[in-house]
Image (tube, rainbow, N blue to C red):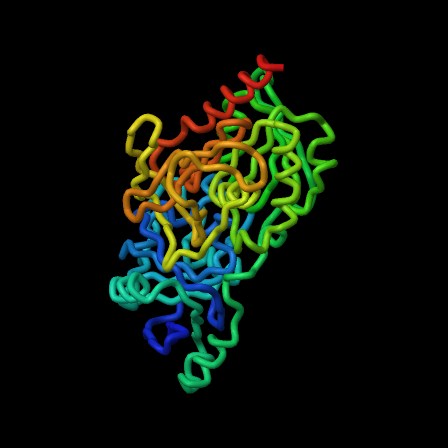
Length: 376
């Protein structure tokens, strides 16, 4: 196993061993705190452009299988772990993690102190980094650092079109359909679609660059914006489409990136978090019920509001309230519009992998559709 080195843009380096495909990769270095679900993390399109550090020390013991994939490929820019499993031990395994990374040409590094690395990111913040293995690891560190510092920053990047479906498609539930939901795929996970189908919703999935006319051409009962990577400030086209949805008072539900875009459509700003929220153990409080949910997160940007209640949309959509907040840092975790049928959350209610505390939000969408139909 050849040597590898992880170089951070602030000049710090970590030595390890090559894992996955040897070579060079660049991206934003972030950490994910989930103790399980590494395959779902790897195939989550929201991680496009990012080098992911797994804080759990032992990764790969259950291998990988096609059933647990959240998309048709691995999206992370690079992968960092401490102790890769030496063997696969699970009856569902179809391949080893190392072999899967090689198959998808993902450059990784193992055998380094991920606890020290995470603590550094926790204080210094997410930053650009590069993994160099094989012959590339032998180059002078100052030369490698220059390569890292020349890489693109996550701020200002629009990545939804990169990870989105290239064509629209429709999926029908097994039972009698109760409504049609038009989905803008900004980096959607397969589990989200499955949750909607399980609630007898017909889903129409559209590419990220869909126009409002096409999105609404079949008169959907609701519109859904998915999770996805990139800077919400760079997604002006998707915000413009969303404003047309809100103008027509069509029920709307957004998650993760979709929450940030709803915030911008309403007239709020978004900002980059120091190190973001990534993992399946993030505590969030539903301010309506007082219930605390353990939730799955993957985001580096958030919505900025002045206060939690009695907010007004600067773009004319009426009253808004913050429906959910993070109990770690008081970050806005959900928005609820009081004068139009729209709501969103910053986390992943499909939680694959993760807790099921937030699955009820898909039921809330069904109820919102039903109430809107009765009001007509």
